Image (cartoon, helix red, strand yellow):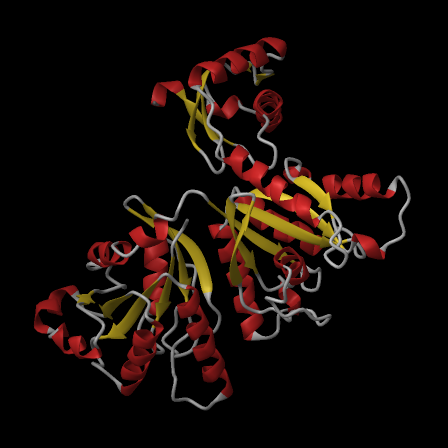
Length: 437
């Protein structure tokens, strides 16, 4: 489970500069004008053995009554709610301001772990600045840093990562299921049908559910965490800041889940936006189940389901491994079958193959269909080993990684699926030259 870190603070204290340093690339807009970063920007980051998601936010200005600052502050509040750890940035050159005190009050009431970064401490002058005044914020020991000069960022990250253990050590027997999809495809209705009660607001108005709602559910001795997310809209249609945050929250839900359930409307069929949402789960390497909801609302014959299945497989070629289920949340038709598919996808995503058996399958696959020659050179695959799960990831040791064509990689993936199943989960390959090992 990947922790989420929100970078917050009042305008123009250097949050975006720090964000860019921590992720290693210039991703957020950096200007001296306060309020440049109006939307949260998120990216993956890592430090030592920890991987986490970093969120850059607009400046907190709780006292402002102007529309834009109020919306930015609301976004930052929502980011704090979502985060596991909050990285609070202040400016040593201006000292403690009323805005810092207001923001600190919000953070203390959030009950979230907070790491206090005192930014703009230049290397030449860092001993001259008394950062201890920031103890008065009541948020623990301040870390003196310079994002611009990359000063003391390692110590700061150590402080952030010290809070991760509670997030990363989640009980193994709990399957986290993210319910994602466009607005108004019936995600909340599915959860209500499962739970047998109105836990989340259901409305015909797209976008009714704006926040992610987590619900514990147990079935046949297995515990599930159901994560209902706001509908993901096309970027061009996202007008309200809070809906943009809902997109981020949905991405975060996919990041944290074990199995992603993509809900599609039977009335609309597979759309471009559905393929984009599916792409999020696929790129994150998540096990997946594709659910076609509102099956009761369309006219059907004995070929309808096959046609829908064919359309989905055509549009989501990269996700052929995902199981498909046709349901009606309204009538309850086949909703009960969802959990067996989720359980199977989760088990396959966590499946480990012994190295000896894996290489027996590899040798047989190479004998049946030898690698083609490229530019007069022959690819040689020496052996394979599995290095991780969720998703199952394999290293292929070869004579030259450049000779591995995507079509042959796909052939080897198909051979593994035929022999070991892996239904419902993607498979990742890492191709490595043996001499470099």
